[in-house]
Length: 461
Image (cartoon, rainbow, N blue to C red):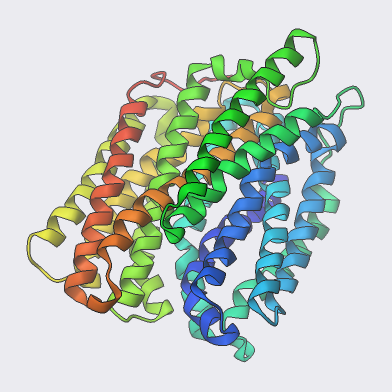
């Protein structure tokens, strides 16, 4: 019961990273929002989520994972109410920032609960389910958003994508109070405040320009932020090393990164989430602005791919104990072929149509199901239970940073090829082909990392 509750919360949090993409046109029309406002509706959530995750995991270690999870669910639910009632773009952006903080409190506890509560022999299967849930929320976010917009329940329009969180959040909170056990509370540990402050600054200076750089045209302040982020990360490492030498309790034990499966796994997660975040954003824009499809229609284009992802994620979770790294290798190759096939198909002549890209989207999802789902197990399988909280925080941060990196990089090449004055099937197809080739680079990086991983996942933490 515990895992069902926390997985439902995970689905809700990840879904809200993507569901907003399809409702942007409705928000513009209803709130008279500018392009910058709409971008911050998405970016505000991502930014607060990414910056606060690791600190949230340490708070859970100090005050208890159940207590932190409950607070996150409550904050996320209340923020969803505020989003749904927002009278203008400014209040919606503020509510989204708070919603991101709630997600940061919820999501890392899911991975920590798996590591602490699930026996080592069964952990790979449960991580497989976690991967399925995250992948389905990622791929299915725009499908769900399209369905909610199309249904227009109670004449609520775009606001329904936030109202739907409210009854779910209330039920999850009540169930968690009753069924989720308390773990992780420690009276002997202390919060590494210098580490918290420096890491928060480092992540903020990294994620903000990734989110805003492309829209702003990559001005000087963007590169200044990147430079400042590098300095802040260097200072953070120095602080953590000094604290470890003195026998203190660092925010992030750097010994975690000595495990090859963990350090390489984080790089793998960065690459995978860079490609999946950016590609489905490009797909949604192509379908809605390029082909003039409705939000529902654009979402339904992804439905067959979402189904394929679910099926092959289930397959991966069952065969990974027997075949180990081979599953990820096959998945990485198929994933790269899927992006390559899409790009080649679109530049070879045919104008883009939903029926043209659906087969290659399915091929990508077959590969994604085989590599994205087992990637979580790869990262966390050798982590000791006492390090589960901070390791899950690093993993969740890598997902958000990877997503922001992918949107920045692929968004730059996609929108430079997607000219509003020339929007049409030819222009849309060309831009989406460019995005496919761009994402292929991340898929190749992920494939290289996969072949460097340990051949078999750990059987015990």
